[in-house]
Amino acid sequence: MQKIQTIRTIAQMQSLSKDWKREGKRIGFVPTMGALHEGHLSLVELVRPQCERLVVSVFVNPTQFGPKEDLERYPRNLEGDLSRLAERKVDVVFAPEKGEIYKKEHATYVEVEGLSSVYEGAIRPGHFRGVCTVVAMLFNIIMPDVAAFGQKDAQQAAVLRHLTQDLHFPIRFLVGLTIRESDGLAMSSRNAYLTSAERRKATVLFRALKAGEARIQAGERDGGNVREAMKDVLSGVPEFKPDYNDIVHPESFEKVNEICGDVLLIIAGKIGSVRLIDNLLVQQKT
Ligand code: PAF
Image (cartoon, rainbow, N blue to C red; front, side, top):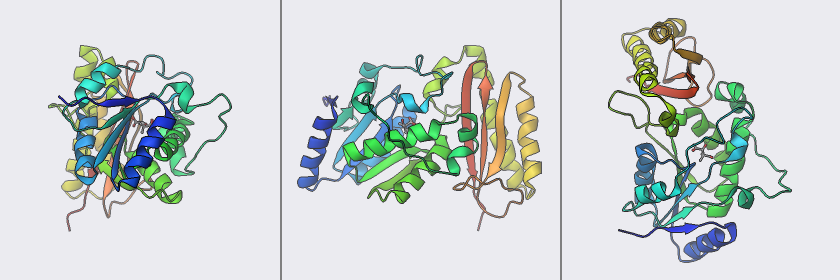
């Protein structure tokens, strides 16, 4: 089994990345907060053919959690993560401590305006600012040529694509498909919080998305009717408390009222204390 090098300091990571660049090696990067599952591993598979050196970061980023969110209880298991990455041809796991990334005097934040303040951004104020700040730092530390993010967090992917373009990071931006359990539940590190009863109910998000998709595929063009179709399914599970349930443009996240191109169906909410989000891209047949 391949032994993966774990790097804890920025200086060591940057120096290794510079060596790789000098040798002409293309660097691939998959940022994570650990608690790795098949979704993360699929991103590793997506990036690997496009690079000669591959870095996975494991860092539970405090600035993207709100004061009442699950920063303290977020699952952490670096040893488990390293064993999941074994045999995946990952060269380095970059796993810095909080104080290595955020120095005491840290005062610089990165924000993608507009897109960061709707849907997830409206429910979780400051969340995308934290995500953008840490991802910009990780890009500067790892200096990747290609990086991959999951479609499961569709708005995060759209925000970070914007950031990559706006700040002229010379990075190929890839988005990997959502990986699902056999009953449709999107894989997420937070699924581990669900009790077995909640876990059974959690399939309602995917069922509602599929109901919306079926309406569009049957020719429905009124966004309101598609929203209603999703809502009908969601209301069948009263334990699910939706934050939003909508049809948006896949990149701008503007609400779609009349469907005339590709759209993204998005749902977020809570079952008990566990917050779940999911989405489905519905493409128009040409
Ligand atoms: O998607 C995540 O796990 C995180 O938001 C990311 C991109 C690693 C930044 O902390």
